[in-house]
Length: 294
Image (cartoon, rainbow, N blue to C red):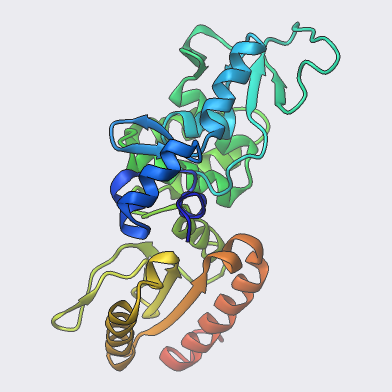
């Protein structure tokens, strides 16, 4: 995969180390020199859309907002927006064509809602959790926690939300988990949350009795493992052999292992959900035949 493709799978924001691990040092440096990626800060890289959003906000006398603001703050997203999101005051009047190529939001923001050229971190989370689909909102919230946003502040945002979308803001704030490794894993967890009887947690260590591994998502009661198989899995013969041994050890120990590709999770969520539902139904029958009747 190219550096840009890797960045897309990682949610548009990544560390230099993760990009080098997936490609090479030379490829990362060439992509940076060619403008395919931009440097956010020390060791942090993003797609050029981050800089384009800032330029658009300056041009329109507005602020970077929503998913574009999430990326501005270094948070990964499920899908990098094709056009930058910019918020301008409700009374703003633009000349014909002035807002072309931009997703405009007309909102009167308070002083605490703005931090520099972007909406504040708190306001960015509130907007994303309120307006994005659940899985996309969860990816942003997970990434914010992973980047150091205080969990108590996120819970407060969920608790204090009012108006349209407030129930989802609260639900996402409660479900967010900074242990999620990337948006791919977050979206898969979002899909799994809609399956009755399943309760997965990210990055749980499994011992039986010795350490077997730390899968992406685990339901300890049903002994179900869900793996988000990204580009990292395609790492050559040694990686393939290592993963085969690992998954075989899980199965021998009585775990059901489900593996999902990035394309299926991102573009075919209903099919993924159907597979998970069938797997859960089978596990309930095997592990607890009387549970379904109860």
